[in-house]
Image (tube, rainbow, N blue to C red; front, side, top):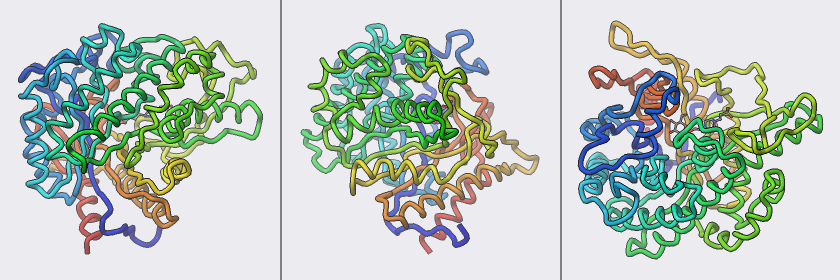
Length: 459
Ligand code: GBH
């Protein structure tokens, strides 16, 4: 892009966070424990051995945090609601103190001219539900519907935008496939069943929210999508790309938007019969959404097994059925996560969704980069690489809009440094630096860049 990026005046510009990554206060006001409270105490689960008990202490500092995002010029804030704050054990009546906290967040947003976007599930399942099988248990889908309905009923007057699930691929395949995320289980192809129960929970919640008294709510789901291509034209590499696209994209997009599972994916996993018996659930899963959310970070270049032999899909992996898929290093620049920087992939995934959903509004609900940040002696964080990443990806948003794709907004991940799941505090994604000893927030160069960029959008 040579011309400065300029998007429509009504384009949504936000930042995003998630409850367990920022809130802390894990024992306050009746919050129950979640699978992440348990998982972080499993030896070896978190690379730096840290836990999210305090994190960014956002539970107590939300007002200054929201004021800071407003001062940078953002007009939306995507946060998540911790299920165990609303229902300590995942079922039963709502905990008023939990609801009150999120009402304060929403009201503080409004006072600051920011539109609140609530995600109902960003991975912190109540531990009591995991004890009953978690997402492997069909009942969890109904429990999620009940939780979603009572939360939306209580807060629908101050929150209009709702996202049911964040990245069900991660919950299913990192939580129950390779076990890198909570609850840390490795159940082989049963991880596909977790995916189905998550999607069913989404559909049940969609229907419940749709029927509620808050008829002006705007409802959607967030998927992490893969911009995938084959490493070469060889049959085995094209097969690798098909499998990656199948599990990473089509397994979630097709049921939500077309009411059907991709048959090749079920066949790979040897689960066609299991899914056939549950095909009635697809009526629920395809409940119409008002928008689609996409979390986009990177492109994946897939190659197949060198010997051309596909292994048994019951071997634990992030994506059962794709054990032998190798992600090839193309030599492109990468972030500290090792994720390739490929801004055009953002346009690819928006186009992938638009192809299935027509004119439905699409939002990038997360996009961002981890880098090693140093707080300078002068109190500056010179995160030029992150600034550049955001410059490239906001320009890609402009490209998507220019191409006529229905992209309506963008949320930077993340507002501030936070607990990066299996990496603990060792990876920073914030446009605001957090000193975990003092809880002092310092706007990074990337944050200042956003402030100027957003001001120019208005000018
Ligand atoms: C998001 O997940 C989360 O929603 C957010 O909470 C988190 O902090 C943020 O990203 C940063 O990690 O195939 O080996 O290349 C993103 C999860 C990351 C899942 C990339 C798929 C591919 C790993 N995605 N990952 S690999």
